[in-house]
Image (cartoon, rainbow, N blue to C red; front, side, top):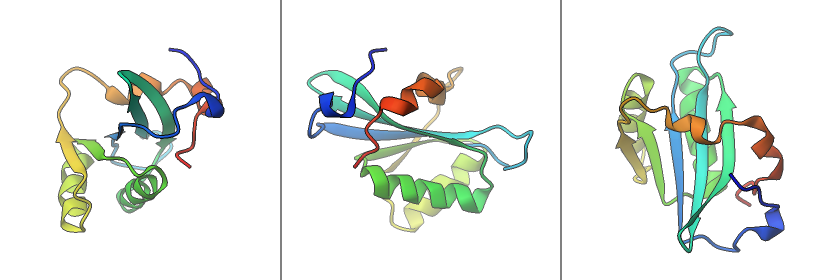
Length: 126
């Protein structure tokens, strides 16, 4: 994966997508919830932002809204299992219509940009 300085990124993207892999608990031994935000421009995909935290359900739902407000994605993909199923239903009921469900079989889509060194050089969706 190529790294980009903020000034090297396109001024606007043709499409911005967020992808969530949600966990159920915030305890120290629990899995992380992860959100990756991607921009598409001229058939290139740019990683824009990564959020990786242990979150309980109320804070997970709050984090989805915060990341949506920060990055203004065209679509928000949430894995339709575990806490994601309820999250999809509630966000749609609350008016976040960009939410779409995904059910990747055998793939953890949050790992695509989970490598921590990428966070240092990414556009923070400003």
